[in-house]
Amino acid sequence: MSTRCQIKVTYLKQSILLYHHWDGYPEAVGLDLIKRQKQLKTWDGNILANELINNKLKDDGYEIAFQVHTDLDYWYEIDCNRKTIRCWKVKGYLLSDHAEVKKGEEVPLQ
Image 1 (cartoon, rainbow, N blue to C red):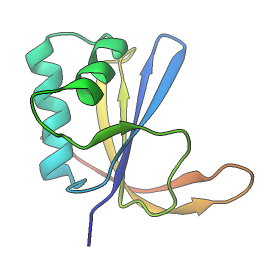
Image 2 (image 1 turned 180 degrees about the horizontal axis):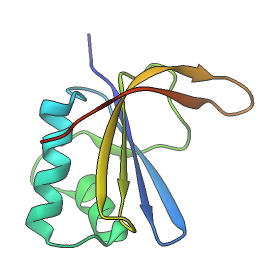
Image 3 (image 1 turned 135 degrees about the horizontal axis):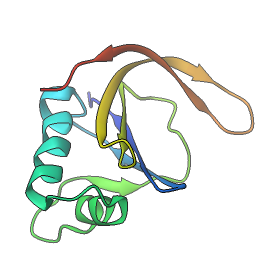
């Protein structure tokens, strides 16, 4: 069974939604997001998102998502405007034309 997550990257007035199918828990994806931001030394959302989805050296499992998946365990938000990376345990979904994640308890990232 996989631990799925989605990552919303917000930069200026734009957002991109990413999906990761496995190891979505904070000790894996959460730390990876923090590590990559520090390595790149930037809060430019375009650069961060491109690094996640276009790293050809290894199969990281990050991909562009066109909607909110309805089988998620964790939800991440990289807010490049505020220079924050946050994580929530997913509580459920509001289903209409487009699913919307209901955030549960926020999970602190190291």
